[in-house]
Length: 142
Image (tube, rainbow, N blue to C red):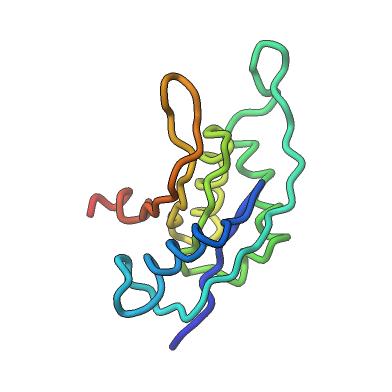
């Protein structure tokens, strides 16, 4: 049975070219990662994230921040994706990316497909061509 594959993002949705690449990677019989999805729907995760102090330290632990962002994911509709793998568009901030990936796994039971478009280059993060990573498969060692 076909379903809509949810694609959650924090700061910026996939642009048209990125969306086309992600869809071609995840939807249809030719897809690199086989899903039974017939289409992909982008969903913004509403979030006001705390900033670190002047020393780069957060008042809460990563685990506490992950628990907090779970409510943001629920507000975006992630409960309807329980038991299914979803797509997560990696934000520029790698620390928040890790926290959201953990929270997504807690909410759905699966680590997400990650649409990565930020890459380290010369000590800085630069935006490059999107790639899709099956983090659930990686975590299971497949």
